[in-house]
Structures are given as C-alpha cells and as structure tokens.
Image 1 (cartoon, rainbow, N blue to C red):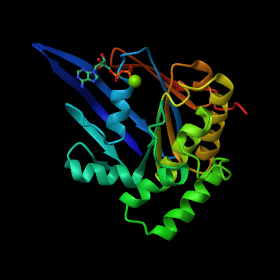
Image 2 (image 1 turned 90 degrees about the vertical axis):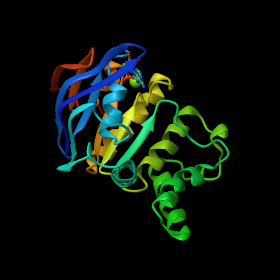
Image 3 (image 1 turned 120 degrees about the horizontal axis):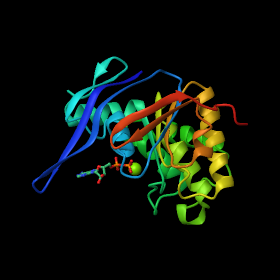
Image 4 (image 1 turned 135 degrees about the horizontal axis):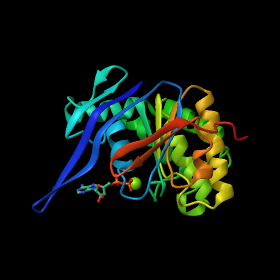
Amino acid sequence: MIELQDVTKRYVVGREEISVLQDVTLTIHDGAFVSIMGPSGSGKSTMMHIMGCLDVPSSGRYLLDGRRMDELSPTEMAHVRNRKIGFVFQNFHLLPRMTALQNVELPMAYAGVGRAKRRKEAERRLAEVGLENRLTHLPSALSGGQRQRVAIARALVNEPSVLLADEPTGALDSSTGQDIMSLFQSLNKTGVTVVVITHDPSVAEYAGRMVRLFDGRIVADHVAGGSRP
Ligand SMILES: Nc1ncnc2c1ncn2[C@@H]1O[C@H](COP(=O)(O)OP(=O)(O)O)[C@@H](O)[C@H]1O
Ligand SMILES: [Mg+2]
C-alpha cells in the first residue's frame, strides 16, 4: 500500500521558494490501477519520484507497505526501489549498447541474482511482453513500442509490487500506446499495482481510478473507466 500523508515538496531557487506539492494526501491500495493527470508542471513527476523512493518529501510522511520511507537513508531507499518498485519512462531509458536481454537482466544483477537465473528470467519476461524473437536486438533495432516493452520487462524482473510509469505512451503513436496500456492492464490483473502518469484522457481511461493534480494539489480523485478492452 502507498500512503502519502500531508506531503509537501519545496525547492529553493535563487531567493525564491517554490512549492511543487502542497498537502498531498493519497492512499493507493495493493492491486489498484491509478492514472495521474494534470498539466505540465503540476507536480506529477515529483509525486511519482516520492512514491518510487527516488526523492523524499520536504514535510509529511510517505509509507510503503506500512513502513516510513521518508526516514530511510539513501542506501535503504535504493534497496526498497530495487526490490519493490518498477519504473517505466517516456523515453524508455534503455542502455543503447546492451541487447534487450542484457537490459532486462541488469536490475537482477544489482539484486545479486546469478547469471543462469538472470538469463532465464529475462527470457521469460521478454516472452511475456511478446518479444521472444527480439532477445539479442539492440534498442536501436527496435521500434518505439518494442523498446517500451523491453523497459516494461526490465521493470518487472525483480517482481515489484508497484509499477510506476511516467508518460509511458508519450513517445508512441496512439495505437502502439493503446497496446502498451493493454499490457499494463493485463499486468495489473496479475496483482501488480500500476500507477501511470499521462496527459492523454484515452490513456487514463484504462485505469480504474483517476487522480488529477493542479498546482501541486490533488483537485480530483474518482473512479474511472477501467474497462477498455
Ligand atoms: N529540482 C528542482 N528544482 C527546482 N524546481 C523543480 C525541481 N524539480 C521540479 N521542479 C519544479 O516543480 C514543478 C513540478 O515539476 P514536475 O513534478 O516535473 O511536474 P509535471 O511532471 O507535472 O510536469 C515544476 O514547476 C518544476 O519546474
Ligand atoms: Mg513530468
């Protein structure tokens, strides 16, 4: 379970202090599929970075599975990230000189998984996202949708309980974007909690709940479509 309690995030830029998140309180239960919408600059990525233990609040509390994350050391945060969270980004963030397999194996290497098991798991995850015939391709030899599938396979290899995606369809054409959202939907049905930031209402419709941010505050939070094929 994800629990943000009165979370604020402030930055000091020059002499000015800017509030990026203001009193954000949000609970996301295990197995949920949530979309986060809001204009550019409204604090979506900042909120996701806090959820993903990439950043800490300026004040307020962040609990993941009942445990305070805002009090952990950077090393402890990295450990939680590696074990519990999978990230997917707009521009895939694949390593260009590594094959699909090597990219997917990487988080397991950090987690200390042995070579043979890494290979087997990476192959299984790539097959799961429909890329069993692209194992030794470099990212440059894959389409945008295929690159995002590699990134999703990589996000899943350590069996995270939460998948966080920041504009995952932003660099894809709309039909490929819908395929990616269908993939998130089927992963969600296996029990993974999915949180997707998007600008696109048709993407948000895949989720069962929609949270809207404006100027660092939650301005809407309601049940959404969740029923697209
Ligand atoms: N490291 C930082 N220092 C100063 N301001 C920042 C920093 N990171 C983000 N911001 C500001 O916080 C606001 C929200 O950013 P962000 O969370 O990326 O918004 P969104 O993802 O909704 O577009 C923006 O105005 C941005 O300029
Ligand atoms: Mg953003």
